[in-house]
Length: 168
Image 1 (cartoon, one colour):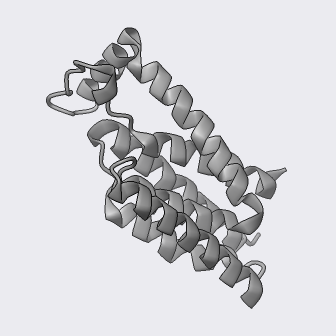
Image 2 (cartoon, rainbow, N blue to C red; image 1 turned 90 degrees about the vertical axis):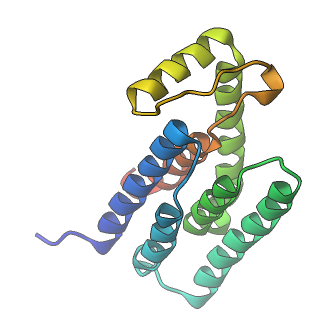
């Protein structure tokens, strides 16, 4: 029985996205190696239905998301790791699924932010980070300074948008 290259690439994608979410939740950092891994793995995923137009369109989506994200990063609205992870996810999503990716990311990110600004949510997140090995969870003194590990929302949205069409 042969195992399609597409499924191997999708498994790698899911693993790297999960690792990015975990690291962002734990340390508020998305390692560059995870984003690079997503970009390196993308050609294996795309090889299933190769077309130059499709590849260029997917690259264009990733570049457009990266450009807008870089502007938002320059203004201090979003983290650099989040920009790179969202651009890599847009590369995988391509032009057909990038709008859904952005909408689901925004919705999940909003829910995550609301949970983390609540006192109980912030407390539970601090406990979870402590259990995951983060030595000193940052105390929350004001709502405006509450850090949100947006990589969690990006990774979850990417998994929700990109994986189901391949298995349904």
